[in-house]
Amino acid sequence: MRKIFIILNILMIVFVSIPFPKISKAQQTGASIYLSPSTGTFHLGSTFDVSIFVNTGGNDINAIKINLKFDPKKIQVASPVGGRSIISVWVSQPSYSNLDGILTFQGGVPTPGFNTSSGLISTITFRAITPGSVSISVQDNSNVLLNDGKGTDILGSTGRGLYDIVMPPPEGPKAFSSSHPDQNKWYKDNNPTIQWEETEGVIGFSYSIDKDFRGFPDNISEGSGRSVSYADLEDGIWYFHIKAKRGEVWGGVTHFIIKIDSTPPAVFSLEPETTLASIISTGNPIISFMTTDALSGIDHYELKDINLSATKETEHADSFVEVTSPFKLSLDGGTHEVVVRAFDKAGNWRDSSEKISVFPKGKFIITREGVNLWFFFLSWQRLILIILILIIIAAVVIFWGRKYHLKIHLERERIKETQKKADAHKDNIKKKYIETDRNL
Image (cartoon, rainbow, N blue to C red):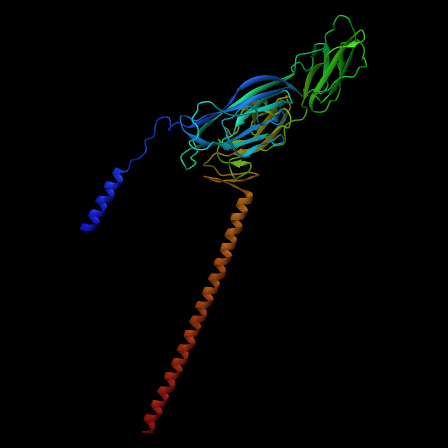
């Protein structure tokens, strides 16, 4: 016992005397990755540079991995690496996909690493291919590794950039549209009308419309008119190109955007929290809903509660209200039709509905959907299943009960038979004793 006590004291002295490293406030701060510039406006068809910087938060780091995400429908990588970089060793060459909208950097520097508040990782050149707003974001699965021999990830925050892609200033006649005035907005009307201003000395205009922002009208005059209308254009982004002719010389080209989305959002369904698809026994169910739109995107959702048990006057008084998913309903007793309407950014909409029956607790009600008992609701399917289970249980109980009673009956008959044989044996013995007594 004394030896154990001495050993424990020695271990305690060694433990206390170990010089543990102190952690400074700087080392307690996580690293961050950010983009510069974080905002900007660029012309369609042009290129622009975005630089990636790292702030190590006062720590010494020696390795970094950056995953960027962007919308490949609006911008694409023209050159993944440009200019200077604090990275001296690339673990793998920067890779990107203009189909998936991803870009990856992975590299580092030898020990002792580097400590900086604005270390340039790389500069990327993007090309603007579609007008609108686009974001470039540093993904959460990026890493900044501490130079501690363990590869400790100290990335604390990631940045993003938001950029606007706009049409270049007009080089030809100034174009505008009375039917589709905002070039950044989606419209469900696929019959646009486009006008342009008359310029002094112009003897004719040439124009065309297509889905190529690089489009160029030919050198054949369409006349001196100042408007044109198109009918039944298919969904998508259209570019109207126009130039003017003065004397024998054609001027520069002006481009005007028409965004058309005449297709409603995708079909969707409402998902109540209850396991019963359309029956609940509470007036406050939570429903979830979600859909997508291929072109303009989802703008918002609206909900309408139609109480089918109410009068027509009350029903007509119901109206749509804007909601978000998930949404908690507040329903009175009776059968309701809950309608959710999804709007895209062009104003198209699609409805999805679900019938929900609300029955007050404490009452016995038989409906077409099922039976509302005093404390819970049972659909006919579930009630039939319960009855079938009870019938099966009863059949099993009857079967085994009859089998048990038969076994008892046979046992009793066996005992009776045994008793009869025993009585007969006793009678035989008794008779033998009587005969023996007589003979004597």
